[in-house]
Image (cartoon, rainbow, N blue to C red; front, top):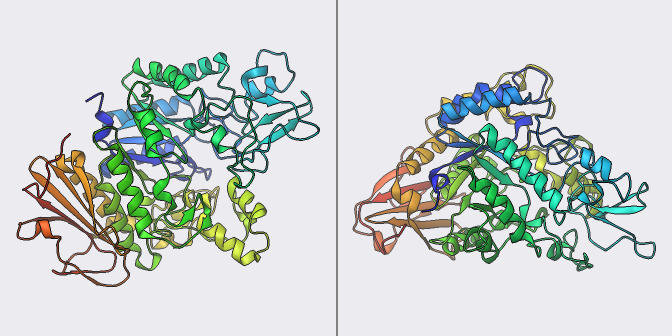
Length: 557
């Protein structure tokens, strides 16, 4: 198989501002990461994905970059980064960086020069257009903040920003911009990083002439004209050549990506990525975005899981995740806060035993939940403010705040809960953001002492899959597809099978193993209850059985 070390791995994502404060200023930093590397290693992961560490005005908390070749002073410096990188490598942990090149900060020197005039060396680093008959260049909406165009009086033109106003889109059609991207990649690869997670990378090539979008699609009306654009594979091929000079890998983020589209990036002559983050399974309780809510449907979740497992099997490799910095906490969405321990541990089992490379987001391994702040003014996420002030304005304040409680990215960004001491053990100073009040109950130290805690379950699952060929390579088959209470699937490889059974019910359910496993002796290798009962599943119970016989077709690597 082509360079497949990433296929055997599991990654831990660090959103550094809220991970651990090592110098007492209230902000997470690289000094804190250095101190906590043994903890990360203890989880059973093999690598770290850092959300952006670069200098940034924090309009979008790191995803608006003002210098690609440095470290934000809040987090440390390049010397401290190197210490973290070297120690991580000494512990056997790979390190991947966030590569954010669809846009920069408007405070980046490139943009500061570009906005001065239409004829300077950086003039075409960004996407500038004249207005049309006193109106905007086109009707596109920004995904984060109003319309997608912002006027600049110095040039008497508008610049494009698919995201926030302070995140102008780079003009990737300019060869000089692509050379800048390659220089950024080499800068970090030469320091020893092991690869990149490439932010909204499928957006970097815009359609010629930037035509008007579909006016009836809120926020994403321009999406068809900047997703999978006309030169996307050409440009990514250039970046791929850089990575092929190093033993590294590339993980792309592809919002609204279909399996067919993903395969065009992951396979064949246009292969430019090793893995892709898709969003399908994050829409089981919403439409397009968490702010457009609907009741949770297990069948929707299962359908998304199975669709990607089947489509990529034998052709490409899946990413497995339930949380990251862009989504609210999963127990508050797909689990149940009243059944915190068992629903959190069941959710771990339901995705960690699929085929693919797992990602665990900081705090997910202890079951951190959504925070509920009283006022929109207490939130800092730019998209939360945009949603609150743009949509459902006829609803009451209480109803709109309920939507924010369920959808805000800030819920994923509250400080990590290390213990039950002041500030959850995150900092000795004043925390930069609110700490979830449940930290006295939900924290690392407490779960280290509980034999069936969510933390201990994550460790068991990650350890098992690392040492199991069937968990790594096995084919996937789903059962009971119509059930809205059970998620049951099989993994098969050579002469072994795994049967994974997950209950999403708040009630006890009668359950007997599926027909093809009856009469075969299986070993219960994972369960989130201490004393499982034959013929019955308790609320949110999860079990993994191992069988020495294949119990069906033999999986192929």
